[in-house]
Length: 233
Image (cartoon, rainbow, N blue to C red; front, side, top):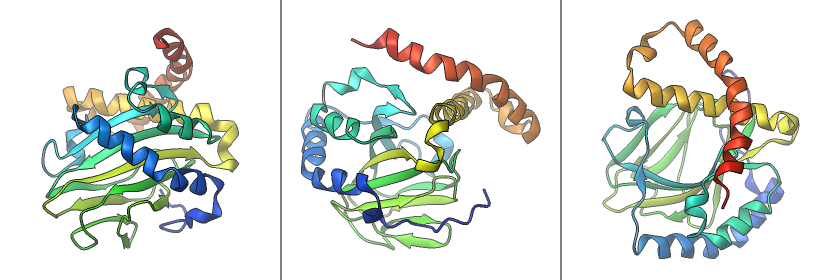
């Protein structure tokens, strides 16, 4: 991605910032209650971390796919995210001590990716987040807002867990392409999961990977609303 956006955006320039920040205690409390009797699950793509099982998540919504089985544990958080137009993903993320999410680029510049600090054990250089050349610390109750397509990474070299609430919002200039953006990213995630099982997929020339993705995107576009309808309780 060769875009010219800054490493980070100013959160307070966007209406969703006040909604999320004013509900920080609600979101943090529901995660704390959940963790009393549950554990988060390791992120499926093991190539994303330097040490296996150090990045763990639970999702409420993933690129417009509703994770209904998790909704029961976070009813107030759901009310918050459903009040934000264009929000297509939301999840709680744990980075364990000595964890490192390696440098990578996301699949689209059509969103704002946002991190709300929930439990932050240290500042940089022990615990922090890089987009392009700029490092920042997470702060409890504050947001980091960035373009996921830019190269980024996260570290937690402290001795304690780091928790954030991650959510994606389609940018106003791309809102008419929301469903195409979601279908494109879901296709990419599907291909990553497939490549975990069939590593040869990673070794294919990029143009062939791109052809495969282009063929799968229309299927994902159709499948997302059907899946939500079938699984809704």
